[in-house]
Image (tube, rainbow over all chains, first blue to last red; front, side, top):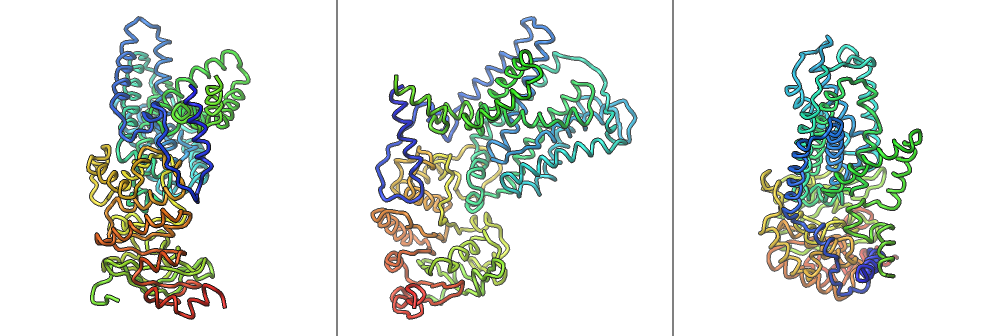
Length: 364
Length: 249
């Protein structure tokens, strides 16, 4: 631990040395093993292997004779992990903080609802779940293309606000377009309960999405997204077609969010504008990604699991003030853990909590 | 002036206005293959704006820019980069949270990058080239370091390395020596000369007159967005108008 502390000190000094410097000290690369592993350009296959093992364990879990409630909890956690990982692709890797990402969830949910409902609407083909599910994703991706072309030109807070506006506008559109969406009274979906099927479907989607993020993160495409996050002008000037890369990332993130939305609508058997276009869903995605570590592969899934159980705890013990508690958690996180759990483990000097731990470590 | 050859990069009556201010006003210029050309002028004379226009970061209001004889006035920045024009920035642009090596890898030539390749990690030959260039710039030992942890001078070298990664025909260096210590300036000068011998063309913005005088065969002088003079460094240093603009009358 002593060595850790010293390292941290060096890095803090290094941080102040910005821009012009008169001396060029021969700086030795000083990094912990863990950080080396986390920042290595070519991610090894270890991560993916462990992920597949975990998926196998989770696939075996229902055979241990668990209750249908446990299966529901499982599929809910898988939904959160998928959402967090998706949001991370655009918000964490690409650095476009999307405060309206739930719009894709809502679109996926509504496409599913409209396609499978038995309620007569302007369009109600009364499809089955498996026919409608891919359409939910595709519709969300197409919407991402249309909305991304103008909004992804915006930088920083302007993008965030534009997406928040898009989100709220879509909720109102869903309310107003009564002949197509059923309007404010909502839509009933065929109530078909299959907890085990839901569990495996979401396990598969989650497995796929996280593996995809892992793959993207180590590919040149993923590196180009990080480059866009770090310096978009620089990336464009060095030959990266930033518009194309951003749009593709946005569409992938929207596609799977749409799939999850479609699934959620089916599982919930009822949708209306207020339950699918709900702000807390975006806030959750942001919180889960941030808590775990923006831009990392394993951070958002970890954050999602932690947030799920925290919420459960807060609901059970502090009902009535649970939103306040979560808000406070968000503030604390931004102040003390801006790089998230994995980011802090990777580079302690980047957060005040990490530095504090480093100092404590040095003292002992 | 080697007028028998076709210019590599040329501008015809390039103008750029910010509101009523003519940042670049009717500037004509040409850079020929194999040259090192300097671009000097007092602060606010339009040097960086001209660079931004050439690298297509800024749209020009009138005039024409040709690169290798092709009209690139409407090209997007990434397109001109893929054609073989790269640049560095006055305020260094590196990807701070990426390692030095990753910074280099991602700056490879994107011209013929297939979708399949984009879905893979950087191939071994890209990595080899990155290491060679880092060695050439004498920052190889920093390859694993985060770019944000480098000193100002080291970042300048890294940025030059990134500009070299795609094997460009011409490099536009914007104040490559500012904030760099004298020893390192000699290194940069040395590297520019070596690269020039390998056939790379340079256009340099500099405040360091010695640096320009040592390296450049020709110099353009801008003042208030207009071309004040052009010629060899010796001619420029004798030029009354230039002396006036620089040292005040």
